[in-house]
Image (cartoon, rainbow, N blue to C red; front, side, top):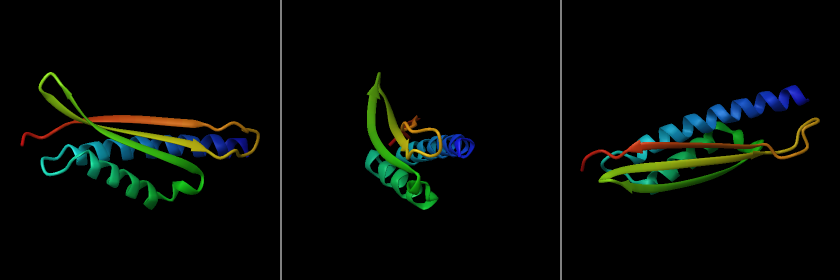
Length: 102
């Protein structure tokens, strides 16, 4: 069971990374924003079915640094205890994308 738990945690990390990158790029489009990035991330996580084993938290923000706009998507996932791993495993991924010129 511990091997399965390690494998699932690695799989979860890859999904969280992919969803964070995709959602931040989507939110950085000229006609989108951080709210649409959050909706896209939540919907994509829901469609993967990973929610049965991991509790997901999505946070998005629009950041302005030195006249450059970024959309930041942060995804945090905590696992349910499986096998010998009784603590919650925390997976965190963050992605930034530069906003398109409007």
